[in-house]
Length: 144
Image 1: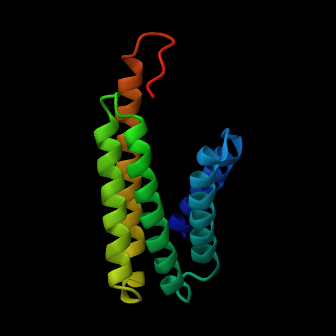
Image 2: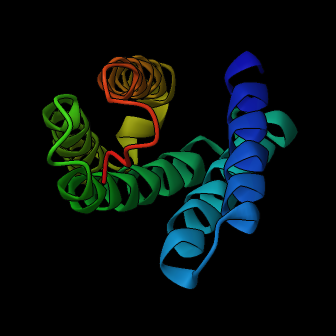
């Protein structure tokens, strides 16, 4: 239930972030990822045992899309020193999505807590690295 709530909140935050972004290239990835995360969260909250297979499938899609998006986005931050961590986070998210897909539907029994936790740790770490890199920029300079 806790993971379902966290995924639902994550999805809503990503949707709001997407809606606030300018241009469709900046809006679309967070909107897609937000909808997938929110659906996973709602599925876990509504039917935790019955929906495990469906949720594992949605998580596989989520991680693949998130991984591809992070890999592409990391090259936009290339001058910043934290871009490699974002690239690594994207590659790992992509690998997690492929692992879930390869073991589906059995993966629904174990994957949700493990992979969501790993992904959240990597997301946090990549944001910390980018924040530290942005902190070292001269005032008014754009990292991209």
